[in-house]
Image (cartoon, rainbow, N blue to C red; front, top):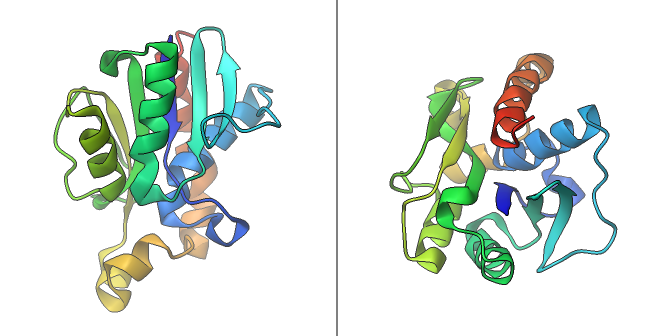
Length: 174
């Protein structure tokens, strides 16, 4: 079994915010590949299954995602090597992606939560760049991650999400 987790916050008010880039990536993937999200949440997550892989969007808040991840992994006996976290990263230039097989949280509170719950940093993650230094310095980090993408950024999202789609296809073996 494998587990792909998109980070985000539940609730419509967080749609198209930087912190919900993980949710957006999974939603795009599911839409393109005609994968339906299950109607009944499991372990406090919206989920879909593709072969032996679960795609989940935790419905706890971003900073508490670790509990949901741990519950899925424990129930389905999923190893940290078979986990992929998709999260935003404001230190990366907007539109850039960075994959790492393991590493620190790098200041990301969602990753900190997963590391604390699993007791390891040894799991893959795909960071999605949301960097916009001018806006970030103007409004501060907390408001920045909860802010909506700018109009210019939203215009670039289809191309970025298409690129991320190929990463997910590789992770799923498709």
